[in-house]
Image 1 (spheres, rainbow, N blue to C red):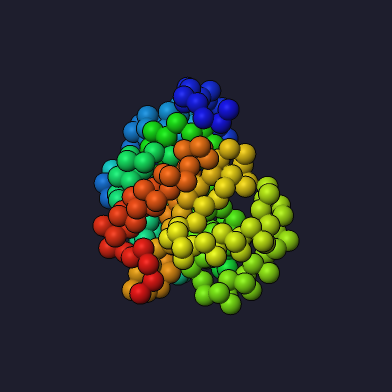
Image 2 (image 1 turned 90 degrees about the vertical axis):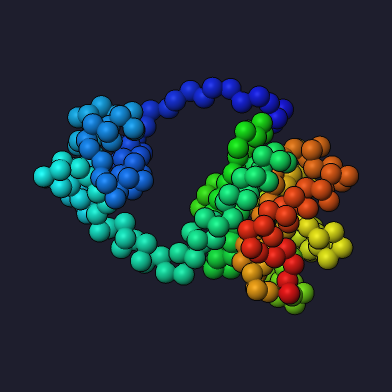
Length: 264
């Protein structure tokens, strides 16, 4: 039911905000040389008049800068100000950049959807979703999504990597929130964490979305927990006999990227 050949998707009307953000991305990708109005319109599929109106608004708000001599748009000051305000979260960008090529290779090998999540403010924050040509159409996470520690495989792997005392405290704190996520309970989260030292990975046994499960491993750098990587697929694909091999593929990607799959 949830696994089928991807079909062409019907394009929905885009809001002005969506169009403006698309223009911002186009300029950001080519900010060193700048982007002309016609090029920005073409690359975003917008009418030139619409693109001009939105680009002008972005210039007015300092998201972009317009050079009247070259007639090109460049990034303005505001994106850099936003990045500066992000503070420690900037480390996530470098982490994603480092791991992404290796996770792309892993996804091509094992299929499914690979997610990369980091610990952030006592929760799990998704910073990358790698779909490739995955046939599964249900993505349980989007970039920027936050989950309580223990909800979903990647978040569960982050939780499982904590010392027993800290882990129990987190599960106790989040017990009520777990009940909002399908069949997840504090007892199930506890049991899954207890299996981690035995298996070397954790599994979401289709607890949140029927028929859709995920397997995950925590990732370390110099002994410190930095993130978790998961692969999402149908629970039949994640059958017990296949799990060790899937986990090994994820570990190999992590190690090849210069990280460790185990705490020092």
